[in-house]
Amino acid sequence: MKLSKLSLAIVAVMGAGSFAEAVALDLYVDDKTKQIFAEPGPGRTKLGSFEKVEDNAKQKADLTAIQTDLELKTNELKAIEEHIVAQREDKAKNDEKWFNKINMRGYTKCVITSL
Image 1 (cartoon, rainbow, N blue to C red):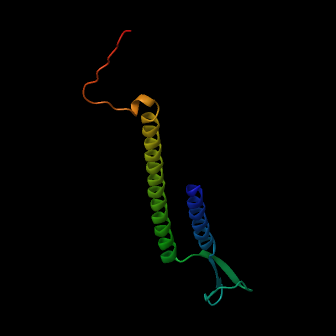
Image 2: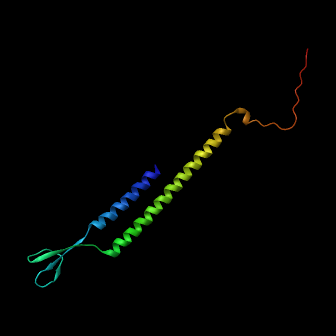
Image 3: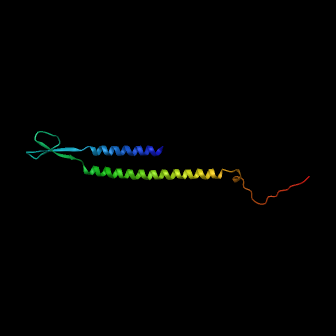
């Protein structure tokens, strides 16, 4: 099914985006010199985990655009499927009876002769 392949692709992109969010920078501060370090050591206190704000905002915007595109494609697929079903029903309705295929115009005359 095309819809499931498209959904799988979107989930893969969303998973890659969440992995990028999981990578954070841990920073430590030296208690004496107040210098900031990226690695733990003696006399260093952890400040916390930090992420880039610009990249995160861009990823969220990209994710929103992908989700909007997915919704549009899903609606388009549903509309196409409904159109195909309607065409098949119309065709089946017209082809049901043999007398719907025969069309006579004008006057017809029936002659009965007796012997």
